[in-house]
Every structure is written in structure tokens, then in C-alpha cells.
Image (cartoon, rainbow, N blue to C red; front, top):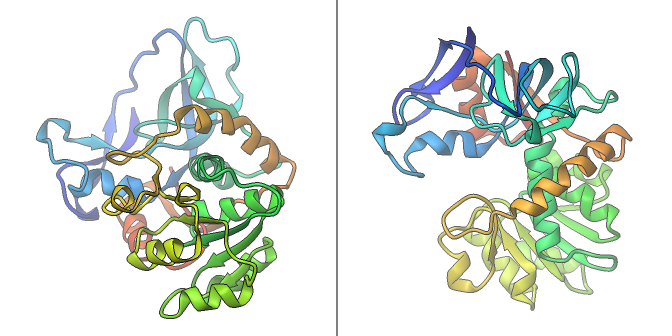
Length: 311
């Protein structure tokens, strides 16, 4: 049996329950892992909130998409992993569990140099950040404005953009400014007058804008400062992206999922993290049984970094 978090209805975190489910048999090309840590992401609570549909046939709904753990069993035709291997599973639907069955192709070797919590929080945010940078062709000499830079995606995007030779202007609350500066960004506070504050620190102009929050402020300031709309991308402004002609990326309606880019990024992200060149910031951990509390913190939080669940 495995402990599994499911949404029993559509609504807020109160609909989450920890239940026991039988371990399913493995099919060809599948692997069972004992989960050591699970990455929590905003899409997790959005998946049962009603924003993405309310089909009762999908209930009870398992949630989550990334985890790290140890291989305990392999199915037929599995050739790249063995029992005892430490791995990261992504994409891994239903990842909020103590044990998980995933396809072999969804596994990336866990770098020995990073812990379980960092491994569980690496690939969804890292793949998303990579997609944003690829879609806007960030390169040496660019000045990149990142809205919501203290979140999981933002912190990885800052580091990857700096590694590409870009200058990064990062919006965040004042409490995250020291962290962002340590990662190579120039932090600025969001709020009234944002465009002017960005101009003060980047008098040469901004060439790329990445919106990770979806606010009108983020979209409006991006449009005001970046001349080429093909170099503005958002993962959150679903209502406005098409209307104003900027790139919408991710898993929402009308978005470019970037499947190939995100899949190809996994090995490189693990390599960078293992070499100490990419930092995964963990703000808080919760027991798996307290997934509802984790989601309340995730929905209303301002602390930088990722929330991780521990089975």
C-alpha cells in the first residue's frame, strides 16, 4: 500500500485527503520508486480549484508532477535504471505519494551532491525557466526583466539567464533582494513606479521580459519597456497574452507547452545542480499528510523558493 494525496472534490485545500492505495503492478518500461521528497507547485492547487475544469469523473484526483526517490522495482524492458538507483521523476502525474509508478523515460539520475528536497524541487521549475529563456532567445548582452523572480521558477531563471551572459533585473519584495543579488540579479521592488525604477537601473533599456506572476502590472510594464513583443513571455497571464501579442508558455489553454525543450533540459539541469552551478532554494518543508497546509502556504506565501513535501 502507498500513502497518496487526493482531492475528493473541487475547491480549496480543505478537499485534500491522505488515503491508502494498493501498489499497481508494473507494466513494460515502468519503474516503482520509494518517494523521499515531492515538489509542490502552484499548478498543483490550481488542478483541483475548478480553474481547470470540474469534471466529477476525474475525482478523486491525484495531484503533483515531480518527486525524487529510490528505485525499488523495475518492469520488463527497463534498461537505464536498476533497483537502488536514486532518481528524479518528472513529469510524474500523481507525485504526492509515498510510492510512485513512473515510466522509465520520466526518470533523471539524481546528482549525489544535492539533497532529496533540492532534487524534488529542481526539474519542473528548471524546465519552465529553460523554456522561457529559449522561447525569448536570451543571449549574451541581453537585459532581462523577470517579474516574480523570488518564486521557484524565477530563482532558476535568474541563474540560467546570468549563465547565458545576460544582465537580469528581478522584481520581488524587499525581503528577497539580498538573495537575488547573491544570484547575480539587480533586484527592484514591484508596485507603483516599477517602470521608472527599472529604467533607473537599466538606462540602456530592456530587451526581454519574463512574466511569472500574471498581473496587469507585469504585463503593462513589459509592454512599455520591451519593443519586440516576441521577446516577452508569460506563464501566468492567460487572459491577456493573446490580446497583446506576447508568448504564452506552459500547460494552460492556448499555451505553448514546449514539451521537447522541457524534456531536453532535464539532464542539463541535473548536471548543473550536481556541479554546484545551479541552486535550488527550499523555503519550507511539510509532511505529505499536511499537503493542505502546504498548499495554503503556497497560495499565500512571499518567502522565496520552493515548498517540498516529505512522505
